[in-house]
Length: 178
Image (tube, rainbow, N blue to C red; front, side):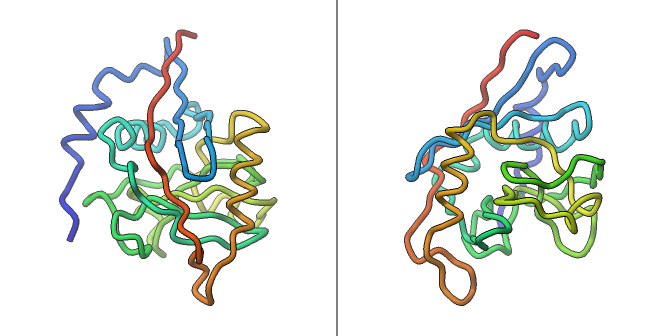
């Protein structure tokens, strides 16, 4: 069982201020850079969670463990198999944001309030995910979307696991004044 990282995350987000600052999360992968704009106006808890996990280095070295072309790429499992998390869960923040190419959303079990560290990025429009999963960001630019879509085309095995390693080398949070 992975260690519970909630206290570290809470410390890392103590100074997060969505009223006066904008936040982005950048994942440097072995396939290129993915810059994500966050949507704290519709999912503040999810945004804070991702910011906190990125700040403590949780995503550094984690692989993309699932890729389904035309659907999603999924990452954020410290075990690399889709069963791990940060040792805690967060509550759903379902919203009206459509799940379309480049949208960042949280993976979960059948329990709507079971999201932790695993996220997915949509590779296309996926309407059946709308209002069932918490969308909370999107690729910030065309270059980032191109990286996401290129990862969406890597070869996979019968379990949707990439046959060539796709890894988040590092994650970082970018803050700017509003």
